[in-house]
Amino acid sequence: MIAAGICSLSLMRKLILLLVCMLSACNFYPGASEWKRCTFEIASVKFLGFQENQTQWELVIDVHNPNPDRLRMEGVQLFALHGDDTLASLKNSDPLDLAPDTMTVVTLEAASPPSAWDTVFENLKRDGKCSITITGDAYYHGPFGTEKLSGLFRKTYDIDFATALGVMGSHLLQGFQGFPMH
Image (cartoon, rainbow, N blue to C red):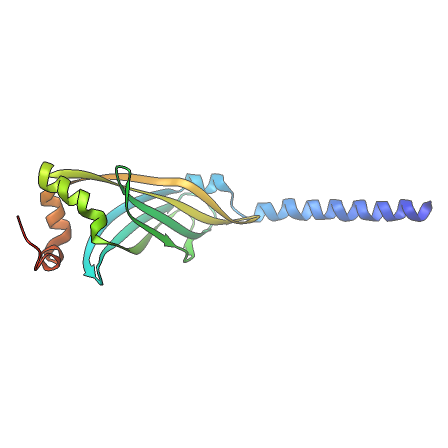
């Protein structure tokens, strides 16, 4: 009887110690609230050209960490949307360190098939303008592994034909060589 009581007391101590360790570990990882205080802004989207039947794009993201602690981002996932159509998606799983109270510039490259942009080009030809929305999620290391913060950033770009030519520059004309121009 005494041995059973000692055994259960020992088990109880181990459970309490395990619970204390788990709660302590949670304090070492930044939670979702720290990440939600960060701001993610799409600074620029640049057309890089065509390569192997794909359009190449460069996205620059400004990430501001207003927190007093360094945050480590496990990666980001981005989507370029035109209405209900997904023009491109990108998942970057390279870790990024965000220094405390600073702005970090992240440059990513994405590729998508030119056919995904047909509707955008049709709108540019017809209306002279269209809207593209860049939206994305961030991944961070939490107490129970990698966690996802959905819809952490979103920005809509209104593009007119003149802006599109300026952004795409000579790459656009190089890419359309051999294509019928109407």
